[in-house]
Image (tube, rainbow, N blue to C red; front, top):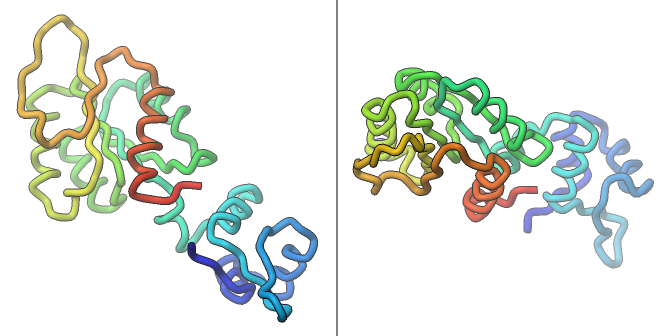
Length: 190
């Protein structure tokens, strides 16, 4: 369990250490005192929760505190439903790409923990996205989820590069919970 001193918290929050001490002493920022001294320690999860509750930027903690999810889709209703189920308040940061090219650029700059690929953009392009991601060593640990159309047509392709598949229409809440579980095993989401 990672813990921070008041000085470290002050640097993260860009405030004076005395301000952090006041937050701690008033009970707004949870933590503990080291026995036999006046030194305060703030556990990582309490700090992240405090920052989120007060709308403060997470700074360097963002990468470990937020699950980054890239949605590759063109269906605006689908995108909005997923964004609603994956809000920042539940530790998600979402980016969207509409094509394979855009997905490649977003994946490099956004460094997602999870990529959701809607196969409605085209089976060939969707499979290509998944295969290209798995070929890149930087994305071997990224969770890949395929959203398959339920058009009655059997869809055959190599599923070895994909972690999970959901048939459309699907319950966005269920997908969000599954994502929380999958990403939560890699990160300590608060």
